[in-house]
Length: 94
Image (cartoon, rainbow, N blue to C red):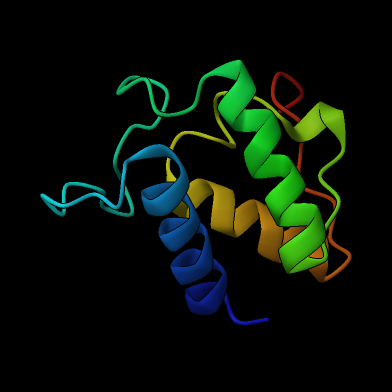
């Protein structure tokens, strides 16, 4: 799957599920999701289920961190790397 497609699907999911459709169009690829309160622990779990079931990528727990889930861009990059069999560096080990 192309990163742009992953990003578009994740953005659409976040808008519909967590932002009531984002009528103001405020969600951008670099919107700080944790800072804005969009990704709570529950919402992160829901997003992980979406990524697994709809995008076909399992995100191991060691990659669920503030760096990888900062915004749609970082989440999309992580999903892309994992879906291509690459192993991103877990936070705190670089």
